[in-house]
Length: 144
Image (cartoon, rainbow, N blue to C red; front, side, top):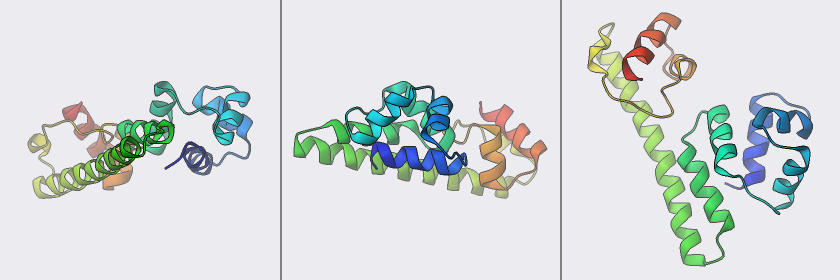
C-alpha cells in the first residue's frame, strides 16, 4: 500500500473532510500531507506509528510498505512488499488465535498470557473480539 492510500484510509476511518484535519490528527504540517500525496516524501517512523494506531494495524506492515515505496532496486522493493504482507498476515493470525483462546477459556482469561500487537489496546480488543467493556479490560490488563 502506498503513502497516499494510508492517508485516505485514516481520513475515512476518522471521518475527516480535509487534509488540514488529517495533518492535525497525525501530527504533521499540511505541507507535509501535500508532499506525501505528491510522492515527494514518505512517512517517517513516528507517522507510521500514528497511522498504525489509528488504523489498528501492525506498524511494521506500514514501515515495510513505506520502505518498498522508497526503494529503487526492484529486488529490494519486492522483499519489502513481501515483508509487509507477512506482517499483515501475522497480525490477522494472532487476532484469530487470541479470539479462539478467549472463546475456549470462557470467563477464565488466565489462559491468555501472551502479548499480541496491535490487539493490546483495550478498545481494539473490545471491538475486534466483540467483548464487553469489562472483559476487554480484564484481558487488556493481563496481556499488557
